[in-house]
Image (cartoon, rainbow, N blue to C red; front, side, top):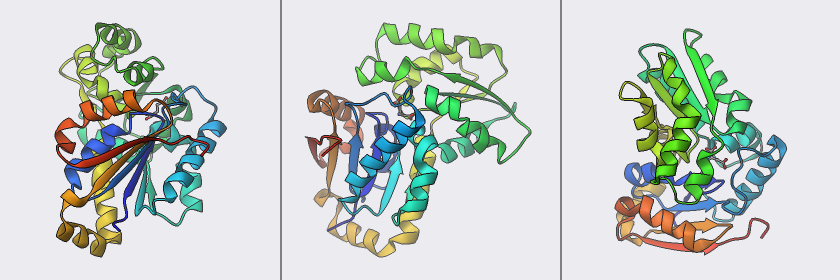
Length: 276
Ligand code: DGL
């Protein structure tokens, strides 16, 4: 059996990474776990986020993944280093790729970062950016109201514009030319965020860069496995989408967000309790 790439998030945010994986690695099988019953992770204490993340990783290990992607900035900031030390399976997060992409994009040297309270408080982005260069200015803002909007599938609502404007409108007073969407839920709100920030600010999604890193790792570690998958053809692949909360609303968001990428590909949906 083909070994999957396992992807996890507190909810539906990690689907923004899955979208890029399906584009860049169409021959790979994905097992996704969204801990929708316990989202948001952003306001939770670090120790709790670490323990939830470990719990989900243990669940995903049952699928014998070739790679695990923590497609959640809050969980990456809290738990990636610890998990890297304890696991035999390759594991990556989304912060390093996002920081790299922003440094490549900025001209003014002013980089904005928005994320959950947990991610912003952890200063994980500041550290990741400053590790490459001290010659930048970083402006950060926690946006706790964004994730509930996305989980409730209200990302296209008029309410979304007001919530986004209220949270980040003030960032326009800085000469920021790129804004890191430091939460995997935020690409769902990208159009609204772009409208509020104006056309001179480029939005940086870590998903694209994360998928590139995944592609590199898979190619390095599993050249043989990949070749086999191509021979078998991607139509044989079944993607599995698991969540800890209501499956219907989760499935509706997956189907809407990944409609083009999933097309006719086979997929299953199930509720798997986080404590199971
Ligand atoms: N999507 C996640 C992140 O990137 C988690 C958001 C949350 O659950 O608060 O941080």
